[in-house]
Amino acid sequence: MNLRATLLLLLVLLSGTAPARADTPPAFAIQYVNTPRAIAVRLETDTSLIVISGTAPREVRWVWIEVTKTGGNQPPLRQQFAAPSYGSFSKKIYLPYGEGAYSYAVLGSVEYEQFTPYYRFFEGQAYNHDTRDLSYLLPTEKIQSDDPELVALAEKIIKGAKSDREKAQALHDWVASHIAYDTASYFSNSWTETSALETLELKKGLCSGYADLTAALHRAVGIRAKIIKGLSSQPERGVTWEKVMQNEDQYRHAWNAVWVDGKWLTLDTTWDAGALHDDKQFHFRLAQTYFDPAADFFSLTHRATEESPF
Image (tube, rainbow, N blue to C red):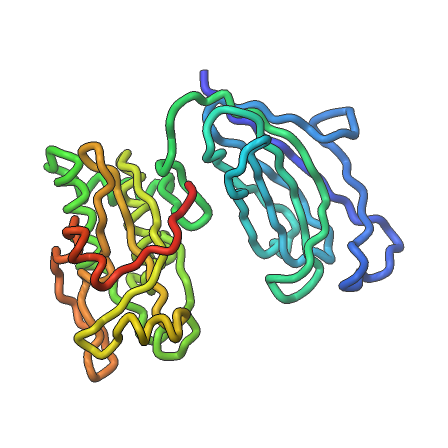
């Protein structure tokens, strides 16, 4: 029977403590609710899933959970979120690197800004007994492929499709014909990134939102999907590679690769959704130009710099 390991941490603020400063972590005690031993807890799971729940001290404004596979060189998995006003939180953490030992830490920041120094509150160990190869299939913080609404949508979209390629085509076409480019964010240079669920709810997003939603829909129906990040050029609009290399931040882009018929198939739902016109508005125009394009054609306008590790 599948096991779901749940760790309950209660971080209790000590009474009479002075307000925390940026250089002083908030004083608190840790009370272990589900174990009599005041030591880090080792979690066991055979589903690649652990759940970390807790109550943050009053001063903590941001919580950070970091998970690393023991003895490996894979990049750590991180989740960052605002501490709820009521203090309690519960986060599902999928262990993306398969069977083996993992270490995890719960950190917090007392600063108002999101990316500020964090203080390590708790550490522990976890062991994943799941021997399945779930690479590029598990949900992440931004690719919520286990969300019931998203799963139901993905299954509806692929209804009638007989092969994984037909499923990928249907999912590509749905995203490209239902998600608008976020022109307000683009032209204001705010570059607001949205998760798969946020993109689905808003029905708009930047390229990262398209890529996250595309990946989530594929993973929801059992097709491996990764995020590719890189640079893009548009020579027909005067955006040559020389211009791109002079200001890389302005031309960063994201797209996907999905595992179909024993190989990685490239797709860019952003570019197949439509285009920005001179009126600075997005106009839908569904295309399949960037669904499994030839590598030499794709490389004319896309250069990958990194890909998601899970």
